[in-house]
Image 1 (cartoon, rainbow, N blue to C red):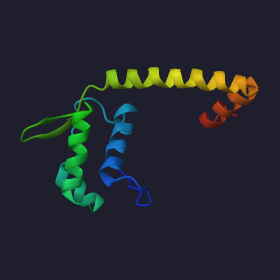
Image 2 (cartoon, helix red, strand yellow):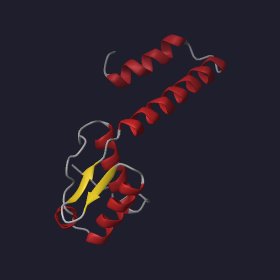
Image 3 (tube, rainbow, N blue to C red):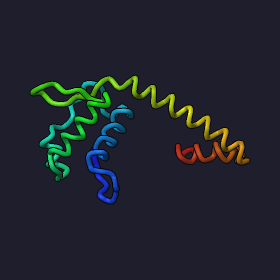
Image 4 (cartoon, one colour):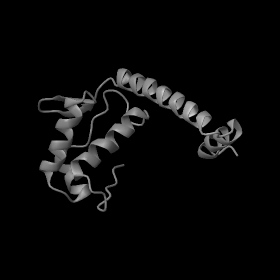
Length: 121
């Protein structure tokens, strides 16, 4: 579920936050799904529980999770976050297409790259 890259220069807790965000946005972790306990995830990843606690606090601060005292941490309704990320993505795609046009990149080349990424060559 969570794989850490010890060569990554970012702090471990940031990697954990990013991995959980990816799982939540992709819909792998649905609303109201309970996250692993701090202690169990720390043991699974062989890291300090304080690092997990820091990651969970950051996820809650950003609105990805909520906590229930005595029960644990749960996935929040991330539909607004997902929709905002989609809007940002569409804006970036539009900017990329305009820049490609300015640089003389052919439409077929740009579409070919997209097909390649999606595995539809």
